[in-house]
Image (cartoon, rainbow, N blue to C red; front, top):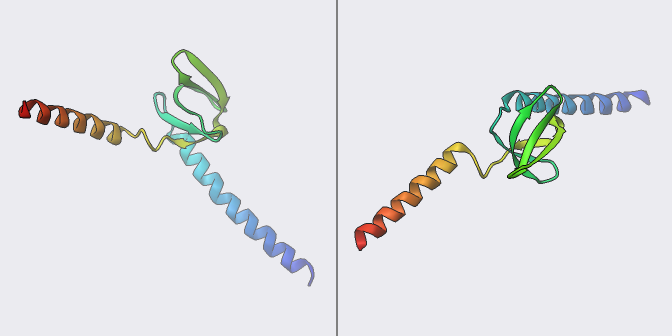
Amino acid sequence: MLVLPFLLLFGLLFMMNRGEKKKRAALESKLKRGDKVLTRSGIKGKLIELSDHSCKVEIAPGVNVVMLKVAIEGLDPGETPAAAAGKDAKASDAKDSKDKKK
Protein backbone atom coordinates (compact mmCIF):
# COMPACT_ATOMS: atom_id res chain seq x y z
CA MET A 1 0.00 0.00 0.00
CA LEU A 2 2.88 2.40 0.71
CA VAL A 3 4.44 1.68 -2.68
CA LEU A 4 1.40 2.89 -4.65
CA PRO A 5 2.04 6.65 -4.20
CA PHE A 6 5.66 6.19 -5.30
CA LEU A 7 4.57 4.27 -8.40
CA LEU A 8 2.09 7.01 -9.29
CA LEU A 9 4.76 9.68 -8.85
CA PHE A 10 7.23 7.71 -10.96
CA GLY A 11 4.60 7.21 -13.69
CA LEU A 12 3.77 10.92 -13.72
CA LEU A 13 7.43 11.91 -14.02
CA PHE A 14 7.96 9.35 -16.79
CA MET A 15 5.02 10.70 -18.82
CA MET A 16 6.18 14.33 -18.45
CA ASN A 17 9.71 13.41 -19.56
CA ARG A 18 8.37 11.56 -22.60
CA GLY A 19 6.70 14.72 -23.91
CA GLU A 20 9.93 16.70 -23.53
CA LYS A 21 11.84 14.06 -25.49
CA LYS A 22 9.33 14.30 -28.35
CA LYS A 23 9.64 18.11 -28.46
CA ARG A 24 13.45 17.89 -28.42
CA ALA A 25 13.48 15.32 -31.24
CA ALA A 26 11.13 17.48 -33.33
CA LEU A 27 13.34 20.54 -32.83
CA GLU A 28 16.55 18.69 -33.71
CA SER A 29 15.02 17.24 -36.87
CA LYS A 30 13.82 20.70 -37.95
CA LEU A 31 17.24 22.39 -37.64
CA LYS A 32 19.17 23.14 -40.83
CA ARG A 33 22.22 25.15 -41.89
CA GLY A 34 21.66 28.88 -41.89
CA ASP A 35 18.96 28.87 -39.18
CA LYS A 36 19.16 31.57 -36.53
CA VAL A 37 19.11 29.81 -33.14
CA LEU A 38 19.00 30.65 -29.46
CA THR A 39 21.04 28.55 -27.02
CA ARG A 40 20.11 27.66 -23.45
CA SER A 41 22.75 30.09 -22.21
CA GLY A 42 21.10 32.94 -24.13
CA ILE A 43 23.55 33.21 -27.02
CA LYS A 44 22.06 33.95 -30.43
CA GLY A 45 23.81 32.69 -33.53
CA LYS A 46 23.58 31.10 -36.95
CA LEU A 47 24.01 27.37 -37.57
CA ILE A 48 27.06 26.69 -39.73
CA GLU A 49 27.43 22.88 -39.45
CA LEU A 50 25.33 20.06 -38.04
CA SER A 51 26.37 16.55 -37.04
CA ASP A 52 24.68 13.79 -35.05
CA HIS A 53 25.33 15.17 -31.57
CA SER A 54 27.01 18.53 -32.06
CA CYS A 55 26.77 21.66 -34.17
CA LYS A 56 28.86 24.69 -35.05
CA VAL A 57 27.26 28.07 -34.36
CA GLU A 58 28.56 31.43 -35.61
CA ILE A 59 27.96 33.93 -32.79
CA ALA A 60 29.79 36.84 -34.44
CA PRO A 61 31.48 37.29 -37.81
CA GLY A 62 34.43 34.89 -37.78
CA VAL A 63 33.64 33.51 -34.29
CA ASN A 64 32.42 29.92 -34.43
CA VAL A 65 31.56 27.81 -31.39
CA VAL A 66 31.10 24.03 -31.36
CA MET A 67 28.34 22.93 -28.98
CA LEU A 68 26.06 20.00 -28.31
CA LYS A 69 22.71 19.98 -30.08
CA VAL A 70 20.93 19.71 -26.73
CA ALA A 71 22.29 23.18 -25.87
CA ILE A 72 20.07 24.70 -28.57
CA GLU A 73 16.86 25.96 -27.00
CA GLY A 74 15.11 26.70 -30.27
CA LEU A 75 14.91 28.93 -33.29
CA ASP A 76 15.45 32.62 -32.65
CA PRO A 77 11.93 34.07 -32.33
CA GLY A 78 13.12 37.56 -33.30
CA GLU A 79 14.58 36.48 -36.63
CA THR A 80 12.04 34.34 -38.42
CA PRO A 81 12.14 34.64 -42.22
CA ALA A 82 8.65 36.15 -42.34
CA ALA A 83 9.55 38.76 -39.71
CA ALA A 84 12.76 39.70 -41.52
CA ALA A 85 10.90 40.05 -44.83
CA GLY A 86 8.25 42.18 -43.11
CA LYS A 87 10.92 44.50 -41.68
CA ASP A 88 12.50 44.98 -45.09
CA ALA A 89 9.13 45.70 -46.69
CA LYS A 90 8.20 48.21 -43.97
CA ALA A 91 11.56 49.95 -44.26
CA SER A 92 11.28 50.29 -48.03
CA ASP A 93 7.65 51.50 -47.73
CA ALA A 94 8.71 54.13 -45.20
CA LYS A 95 11.55 55.26 -47.45
CA ASP A 96 9.21 55.48 -50.46
CA SER A 97 6.68 57.55 -48.52
CA LYS A 98 9.44 59.96 -47.40
CA ASP A 99 10.65 60.30 -50.98
CA LYS A 100 7.09 61.07 -52.17
CA LYS A 101 6.71 63.82 -49.56
CA LYS A 102 9.81 65.60 -50.85
